[in-house]
Length: 132
Image (cartoon, rainbow, N blue to C red; front, side, top):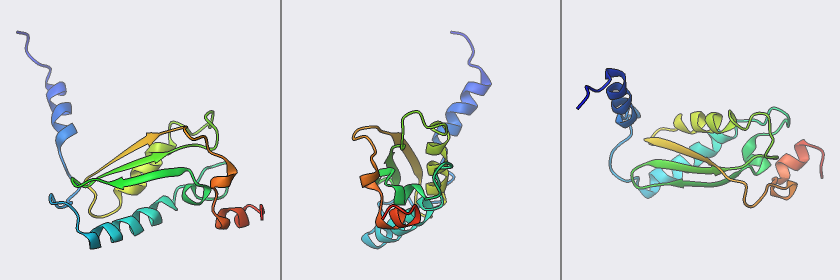
């Protein structure tokens, strides 16, 4: 059997290492409420570079779910599948959510069903974009 490359072992170890500092036990109801609030605050710091409104108010976040192991699952979309920042925006969302205390890991999935339409925008976003 050939010897394993040391860099492969380091990469495998890095993939399972948790440096979040989050507790191991499932979150309490109080923690879920705080984490939910803090995630929304952080998502509102992420902007579509072509539209001067945050992605939360634009309705680009379809689902946010906190698992018992404190993994945060985020389903998001884009205003258009050909968006020039399609590769970067999920990373921006992941980085924003990772700033929330009590989350061990963040997984962001890009979804296009249902397709985004302006109907998903909040009144705040419509007002900001003079669409009311």
